[in-house]
Length: 135
Image 1 (cartoon, rainbow, N blue to C red):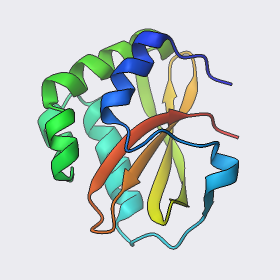
Image 2: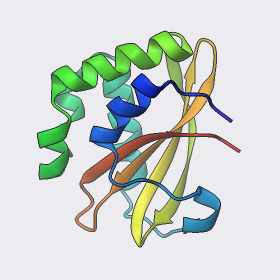
Image 3: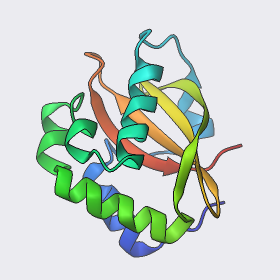
Image 4: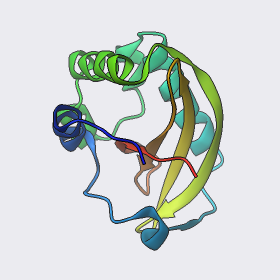
């Protein structure tokens, strides 16, 4: 299981859609909107390229309030400090979380590959982000 410091947890708390129950209990295979996987991957690529303003293009209003480009930059720098320099994405899984689409983007950093769960609302806007273990 990924060990994340309290500081990282505080940063994620402002960005996460909700406190997550264990994925095994709440997540199920989903038929996501055709663009959710592409939008989630493009979002992670934008973060990796340092394009934090571009990364928020598909945010819902709540995410825009809680995750400014400056906050995304701070969060991404902290993640790279924790996991190493961003390398690339290496796949993704789609699921449903409380009836809404979720895409877990397998994201490779220098020291570790992690899952970045990108949550979507029913309007297919990005509504949350969280680090999750990859099985």
